[in-house]
Length: 269
Length: 282
Image (tube, rainbow over the protein chains, first blue to last red):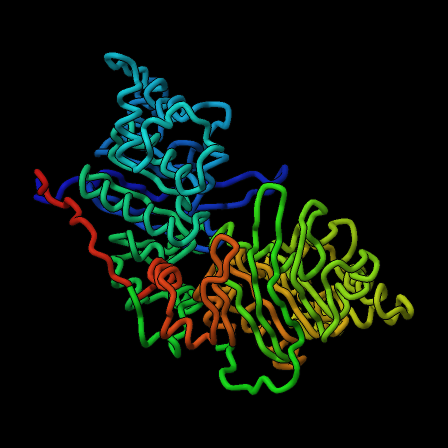
C-alpha cells in the first residue's frame, strides 16, 4: 500500500440523464470524475446549465446517477439504502443557496438545527438542546435565539443556521451549493471565513459549487471547471487561475468583472 | 472595456436629484440622496441589500407603492418627476426614461412575441401603424445585436436564452430613444460571460445615443467598469460620492473601504489549511 491516503470521496465517471420526452433524453452530466481528500476543498465552477448542481445532488445521494459511482472513504455508496445510506448521510451534509427556502419556516431554529440528529436517531443525554446551542455558538449565532423562527434572522444569519444544521452531525464532507451566492459581499466574506476556520478546526472537506470564480479562489484547494455537463479542466487552484489551459476556462476567467485596473492602484484592505 | 474617463460633462444635467427622502410607515428607506447625471454619463449607485438603491430608482420612475411618502426633488431636463399624476408619469416612462430590470423573463409577457411587445412600447408613445412599429422593433433588436432580428421579432420570450432576453429588454428600452436609461441590477442574473457582453453592449449603446444612465448594482467590480461617477449607499444614507477614479483608487469612507476589501478578487490568494493527503494525517 502506498502512503497516499484513499480520498475521502471519489466520483468515478458519473453521468446523469433526464428524460425530457417519450424518446428524448437530456444528458445533464457526462463522465465526471474527481476526488476530495480530508481537509481539502474542491471548487466546482461553471455557468448555468453546466451540470454542477446535478453533480452535487448525485454526490449527496439526493438523486441517483444514471451511471458511474461514488466512493466515500473507499466504499461504494451509490447502491446504499436504509440504515447504511443513513450512515453515509451522517458523514456528508449539504448547505444550499437560499437559506430561507432551505429552512422550514414553521420550525424554530432548534428544530431546524437538530433535524439531522433526529434523522440519524441519535440520542443525547438531556436532549439535543445543548448540542444545538453549541453549534449555534460556533457559527456565531446567539444560542439564546434558538426558539426563534428562520424569518426572524437576516440572510447571513439564516445561512449560519444552515451551516449549524450541517455541522451538528460532525460531517466529514460538506457540500456547499452556491452557499454564499445570495449574500451581500460583506456577509459573504464573513461566511467564507467561517467555513475556512471550521475546516482548519475539524478537518472538514468541502465540495464548493459556485458560479463566482473569485469566490472559489478564496476557498478551494483545487478547481474543476464544468461546461455542458462535462469537466473541461481540473487542477490545483493556482494552476487553474494563473495558467488555465482550456479555452473555456480562459473565457470564463476573462469575463469575471474586476475592479477596473485604471482605478485599482491604491488597493485597500 | 467600457468606460469613458474624460468625456466633458458639458450641458445641464439630464437628471438632477436633490435631498430625496423616502419614508414608509415602518421607517425611512432613503434619507437625503442627491446627484446629477449629464448626457452620455453613467452614475453607478452601489450598496448592499437594504441600502435604498432600488427605492431611489423606483422614486425617480414614479413606481413606489402608495404608502411611501417622498420629499425632495428629482428633475428630468428641469421638470419635476416626483408627485406627478400616474398618467403624466406613464407618458415619460418608457419614452424619455427607460428601464431595464434584473429578470427579463418576468418583465416580458410570455403570451406575446418579443417583436409585438417592443412595437407596443413604441406605439404607446410615438403612435404610427403597427407595421411601422414592427419595423422599429426589428431595428432595435438589430441594434442590440440579436442575430437575424427581422426573423426573430416573431419569436416568444421562452425561445430566447437569458442573455438574448436581456438584449430584448434593452431593445425595448431603446426603441423610443430615451435620454435616461435606468438599469436596476440589469446584469446580476446573467452568467459572467453573458454579463460581460451585456456590459459592453450597454456602453456601446450609450456611446451611440449619448443617453444618461443610472446603473444600480451591488457589484462594485461591475460599477467600476461602467460608471463615470459613483454613489455608495448604506441604510438609506449616501456614504460617499465621487468620480469612479476617486471612489476606487482613493476611497474616503470606511464603509466604502470595507466593501472594496470584501469584494472577492481573482488575484487574491488566501491561506487555506493544508489538506491531509497521506495516511495517518497531520
